[in-house]
Length: 158
Picture 1: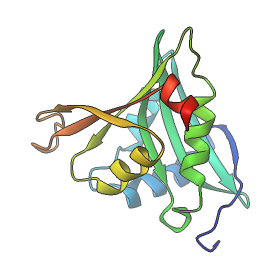
Picture 2: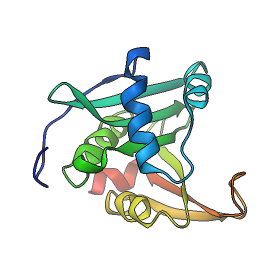
Picture 3: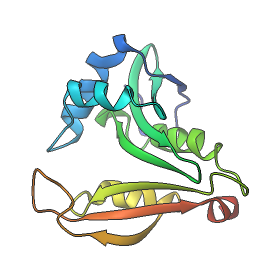
Picture 4: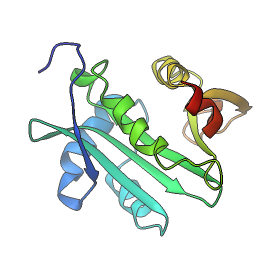
């Protein structure tokens, strides 16, 4: 395990054989994790991409996002608990921000649970802003979600 310093990861497309490690990260990261069936269902959608971050031949982070005409939407994002604060998450987000342009895809959106303070602070530090509160957003609880957004012009200023 690395110390809490920056590590460089290899980011690549998620493949089927990654699922055991992805599921382990998912299950240890969330109170209400996605199950494998949910991952597979979403990844079968036409415009959905899954990425994994690898370090020392093991998966240490993952992100699932959807490409829309004018925006990118992060559906799922998690970093292995032993690799948090080592810039794995920021490298995944940087990979995604490279797809933003002033002409076409101008923003990235995501939903974050109101109680997920770590995620809210992480994305805020990367320039995301809470643009609205979605009341009773989750079906597994009555919890609200924050709709967070990063605009191309704001990313360029960072």
